[in-house]
Length: 555
Length: 68
Ligand SMILES: Cc1cc2nc3c(=O)[nH]c(=O)nc-3n(C[C@H](O)[C@H](O)[C@H](O)COP(=O)(O)OP(=O)(O)OC[C@H]3O[C@@H](n4cnc5c(N)ncnc54)[C@H](O)[C@@H]3O)c2cc1C
Image (cartoon, rainbow over all chains, first blue to last red; front, side, top):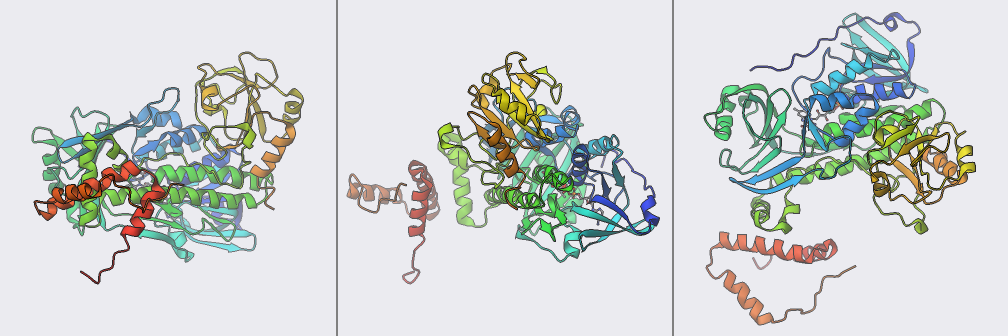
């Protein structure tokens, strides 16, 4: 085995909390410093909430683990200042090819549309995003990240949560208003509270072989069904940074897990795939099987909030694990911050459970369907699967049935109670309906933007935004709305004609994507999801929609 | 919503059945299974409407095993 990555070692630092009596109190304690926990701490800090992050280990992910990060994840990471590092290091790809036996039967292009800052997908080993997040956390003194701090118990007492932990310098206790449980798929905290994550276990075993090689495979996702070099099984090939490639071999049920961790056993398989003349070395081998499951409720006793893999877990097909985890985290944090700042009732947190249950169900459904297509459960379903693949080569109709993983797309919270439904007379197209995540487009910042980036998405987020087509500006109403806390007015116009942040729709794509007419306005949540829209706006409508978006109507 | 047509709709019922029998004349069961799978997929796409397809599948699944 060789390695292109050396895990950083983060030293244990004793905390004054170890000896505090009574136990130290923090608004938020986060259990787990994986991508979910680290992201949560940063987003909270951006919203003005300090937190303590506890991780039992002293480094980032061992091995590459999550590899494909979606456009939405990059946009989410952009909000905490880590998106660019991801794109700089990652491998950008958008073309996928599907092979059956030795023939290509199908090919797809993920983002044929121009005018987005971020690509559809990048590939990057999970230790990099974790490292970027850890580095970024250093810019925020209000985040207290403690390594080698293993949480042993989480217990609600009255209105507080008590967190017990063990460290090289001894055990101690703290209290907090809310604890975020981001301790991963096997969540020891979930187990210790006697809570279940339930769903389906799959019998098939898979092998991840990360290899180093010099070969000119293109930067594409290649998926084989039943290839000659690995009969009866599926194989996925993906490029990673650092000259590394991931090969994911299906091994079938009952494979000898221990045996397949031996490079000498895997070598002939890789040779059969690549041919004799390509030299390669192993970087990481991992044998896994998987589950699709989730907790019934992500909120326990009002103040123990599960987020990321601890709350919901999917098969890797579709790259919905880490991507889904980040979407859950961003959904939770703006709500938690507003509840803590008493800008919203605790009922707002319930909508995290509702919206992300929907997201988790969507991810589980998609990843279960992909898994069933990839690993048919009996002879007849295999026959249909193979027939689909055979027909797909020649007939376009069969191509939508080919399922080698439906890659993660942002979830639309269409039925969320936070939305103000469209008025029928407004005649909006279904895209960007209330609940949808905003689409990007190039813009030019004419006046005082949230960000200097010439893109729309960086102008949104962190607070509510009312995005108004400035060809018709209801000035009195806007002047009234400008006084509202947590709301910023952003005007789209050719030139600056008001005090508000003004953007020029430089390529006309905002108008196209948002179906703008003079006066059209979108109310956008701090997580960049649309929550209401109107053809003509007035202060009363916006205020009512904001009340609703903060769950003030639910109390 | 479209409904599955359970009334006769063939332009030439006898000719259809004869053609179907011809398809399977060789009697190779594996081959017949593959033909049937292709046929189902081709026809299902032509129908397209998920509600109609589900109704057809529901009725198709009502097989009794007594005569097997
Ligand atoms: C082999 C493998 C391959 C994968 N491949 C993919 C992929 O290709 N694509 C994809 O999208 N996803 C993939 N995943 C899933 C992806 O890694 C997860 O979705 C993602 O890591 C979830 O992040 P998380 O922060 O919720 O949990 P984790 O990353 O599991 O982080 C949990 C953290 O909690 C810490 N912790 C646990 N218990 C305690 C405790 N008691 N006290 C303190 N700290 C604790 C752990 O040290 C860890 O740092 C893969 C996972 C594995 C294991």
